[in-house]
Image (cartoon, rainbow, N blue to C red; front, side, top):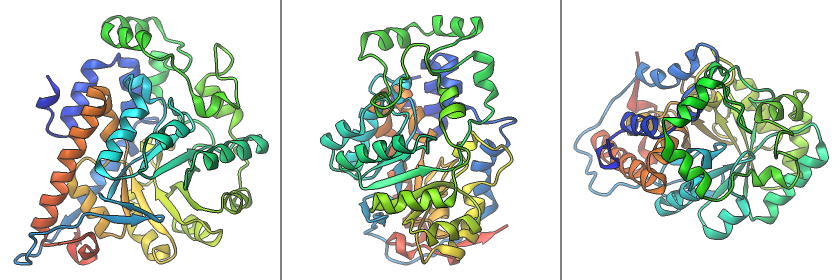
Length: 381
């Protein structure tokens, strides 16, 4: 199977599975516990039908949106995800370059493997910084200051990960950073020698957002211990309100699900929220972003920008979310499989196909712009 044989989400996933050692593939692919929420993220879109209108004159279609003050040429953005140079040696450099080519936003994780400053210097396309809240308040301030100095406008605080989820696939393979593989996990790396060759012949793996502040090298701290020992489970709304005030620019909470929390986010001055369950990787059995979208938009849609991520595989999924009031839709595994399959070329092929799907589907819906989409386009089963 080659890149030119990839025509949809599932094709990219299969090619990524062929190219990655199974511990790394399963790190991308897996969820928490029984992976109920992981599956629900996609199946939730099947509970709503699109109702197209015809004879509307849709020669010209405008897919652009403005979200948190950022103008995007597409109603989708590349969500911040960790450890990207493990999946392909280009890592976040491929992600940022592809986002720039398509005129959309990309995110850089605190656990990113390329510095946000480097990417901001290379690309003028909007960049958001996905941030974790640490017990060390001084560390939080220092990391936020680094983002400001890099020119980042959008802060995205993840609030659903005050401790790591129970990802049993990783426990079986021993996947961690630094690697603590089981014998079976090590054997899987031997079966995919090209990944190992690429890993050792390119730039040494690092976590530049953290390296300047935390000793993540050697055996000192694993990613699992980072979540359980350094992140602060006592974080409160007062802490976040202080961060919003200190940041003084676009501030988004990622991991909100309930309307009550959405209202609190608006009250403390957040300009956006992402309805998300961390790709089904945290609390299994939690509600999907799409399932929560309607009631949250009705509660706060006039006060801040509501986005969703999780389970997006098709252009029709994007249109359903936009019709319910989402301002934009975040992609995660959608582009990570493509990255793992073929680096920047893979992401660009995946985005080309999604862009074509959204354009075709908007024409079939009889809508000339995203603003034309609304609840009248949908019927709940």
